[in-house]
Each structure stands twice: as structure tokens, then as C-alpha cells.
Length: 108
Image (cartoon, rainbow, N blue to C red):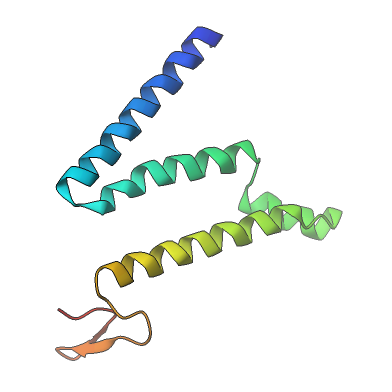
């Protein structure tokens, strides 16, 4: 891939992600912002050469803990994202309630 093609691809991706974010803002369906956030998060994980299997093998074989730190960042970001999504929907993240005999996190 040439440099011009790479720049064009990045421009298209940025336009698409901006459009998705604008659509989420206009419609009030903020769940659509997961797409751009996931793309950017995946981009940075790819640039950081982070892989779960290689991270654990590097800890065991090479005693290198840097990639495990990246895995913990990913885990914490996903936990925070789920908690903020649940709380913004008015759901309880601490225990849940029984809804018709079925344990759920949110009962409307």
C-alpha cells in the first residue's frame, strides 16, 4: 500500500467514525459510540503489539511484565465502560434485583 492510499484510508475511516458518532448524538442512541471507541482502542492495541497469548508467554518465558500491564488497562477500561453504560441506563451494578424469578442487573 502506498502512502497516498494509506492517507486516503485513514481519511475515510475518520469520516465514517465521525458520521457514526454524529448519528449517535442526533438519535440519542449512544450505544453506537461503541463502534468508534472500539476502533480507536483496537488501533492503539495493535500499535502497541498487544496480544493476550503473547503477553502471558512473555511473562513466563522472558519475565517481561509490560504487556500484562496493557492487558490490565484493557480489562479496567472495559469494566468502566460497562459500569458507566449500566448506570446511565438507570441499572444497578451492585447485586441486581429479581424480575419474575430471574436474577438480572436491571429491572424496568
